[in-house]
Length: 591
Image (cartoon, rainbow, N blue to C red; front, top):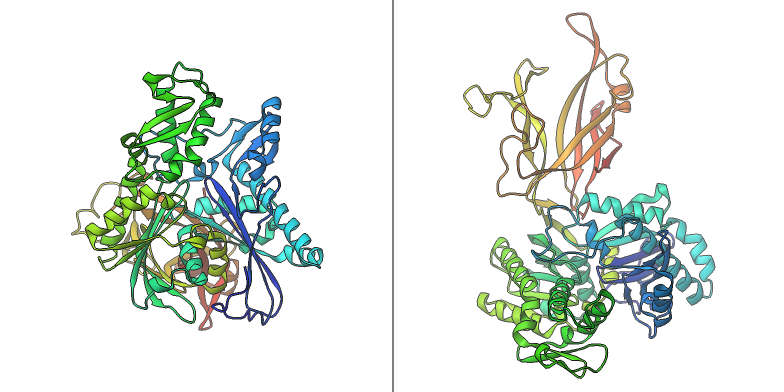
């Protein structure tokens, strides 16, 4: 793809390599950008993959492993007939849809359906690492063979390159941390380069690229509102946006919290597979290998072509047999329109419910829905969502071309242009604080509540909830204040401060986070991560005082600062030294 005049020239002082990787449930795409001072950024897709019959930006997110857990084939190789035969001869295991095993525990699978299990000797993290290592090698091969000085470019810039990974809306810090570690283990960045791995949601990357490419220019109006719905292979991501500016670059602000639903295209396939398994029970197709070939035919043909007006569809079986009572004629099985619609029913209902939530929570001001992703290209799904839009007076549009497949390019645009200025928290986020004890408050008097006398002589009660604001500005930090008394010779552990960030996933947070007298969290609360800060410099800068009992102590006063304006949490410590604000290191740790 050529450089685009919608992007400003790169103003950095030196060349930089940016690689974006969109690992989807079913397909993966990768793009890169070689930033050069004074030049307009040019986005390039990896279009050459091993064993690919025709050049394509996407390859299957599928791997083959041998019995020892060694990866033997990747991507387009897994669809090559010779590779498939080799896999059968050597007993290799095909691994697919593994990305969804990374999902947060609070995202449920559609009732009655299940994911293909991961083999016992593997983990989702290892598969992700192996997949990223393969992608790295393909990016290297593409750059070194495409550019005249490609080897020099790779050798000089790969050690400092930025890696942008896309995620569903529902992936949180824990999933991002695992993905970052996989990128490190795969050699995309070194152990000290973890901060050069960044994350953007797939839906956001899709709409940004659509704007960057010009394919949705007519739909983007300053001060307008829209809902972006990314119907992918495994997840459906829905976010409401207000358009703050269109030119010179697009500037968006979230108007409703981004939501994630496990309702993508693979669940249509799962429902169809359950149907075929029941219909073909006791026949020659009643084994996993032949059944999977039937499902593959469904995926490539009937699933993609089915529309509202189709009364019947046919799916190819192996062979040429006719079994009238099973609807099989010359090796083709008949599926009625009603049966086809049943395969789409659960994902479609989830999408409609999610769109309604986004519309209501966005103040009912959105007047358009932009659909992207593979499932949205289904004629039946599109017609059903257009009909849903009519009920609410909302136009539903599906851009052609790049918006359906260029999430990886959109991730590059996101990294370079930072188009989203503020976000709406998906859940209530906050920390625990102490609050003044109120003898007239029944909650404060509950047996087991922890109280203590503070430095000011007042009584405080612990484990109270302190919420972060609903709208999260990209550059805004949220702070919690802490006070700590330490002796004159503290241990290293004394100087390591920890505080926990919580998410409350229900309607309205409670006054306290824990049950009285117990360490158990109340229903609805999850510990998202722990912020770990080093107080060594603050301790050294704090004056020592002597208490009334003659004990020498230091009273440390500091704040933990959290930034949530991007798609991951960052943290640092802050305190005052001689009237000046000083910042100290803090890291995020996930369980």
